[in-house]
Image (tube, rainbow, N blue to C red; front, side):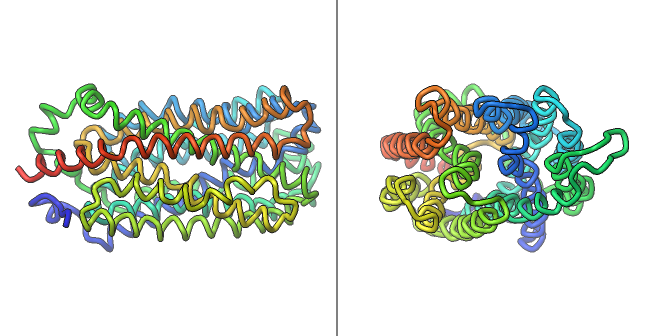
Length: 444
């Protein structure tokens, strides 16, 4: 059995308080995804009004948000290591709510692009601080299930974006071209941004509804003397490099699907947002529930002595789901496609959970926020930044036909999953050895 180091249990808040914290962070994260993803359902009206190409639209869906999200994750991760993490999140929520509202006032491609950049800056504050607090608030053998519950907010938020977002779009259409103060006549896609941005100004106060958990091992000399960022990266270079590569491949798969599946449902199956929104919501709820179950399985495997459980279980999942990965975009029935899409989520969602859990298990307290910020930087530059853009570029410049977006997605999904599987299998011994070495340090 793998247990906490002596003295850690007495420093943590009660489990009830810890789970309340997870619940508050969960709700904030749900609305972060609502703000983030509803734009993918607004591709047709934005393209029509602004006369954009698929590639230009892919810049709004991906790089505009992802580059700022990634770049600011590192300094905000540093801030999470040194300042009250609740305040970091509080400020971030206020910024992204204001920026989402600003998207509704955008009248040109440049203005919308700039507003999406600021949304990314605000949302970058959440994950480093949240995962750092969860890692400090729970025992080691419960960290993965706690982070899984929190990360399930991503799929719940996706469901909200595709479900509530679909209904919000339908409602906004009834208000199309109403006059706004300081704006004038507003298109329904602009009204939609206002509807999803305003609740953030209330949700920001949830970050102040729980106490700051004490930082695990914050007083140990090992954290100060040997726990420098450069030394940690050098010590675990092979493990971190291979795991980051694998998780980045899966980030490309996940963000590409999230950004382009709505357009695929429209172009390939002729479904309207109000119809595919409900279906995609159900698929995302399935993904959220499965993520929590898988997190619990990983925690149990880890508690029983499988030190490489976070990566080994992931490889098992990819192999088991390979038929769905290969067949998804060959399906001619929309419901068969949706079933495959639901299964594929079991490999596209957990990478940040397992990555953050590995950091919580290996890294000193003073480095976790920075390391999470660095992972977010890579995942979002490669995943959210490049993923949707790769799909858009293949569709526009290789196939020269927007109806071929499904084939573009198939290339990205199959290729990304295959590369991730190879990289994770190769690095399993390094994870086992790193966890064993950390256990020896904690036992001192």
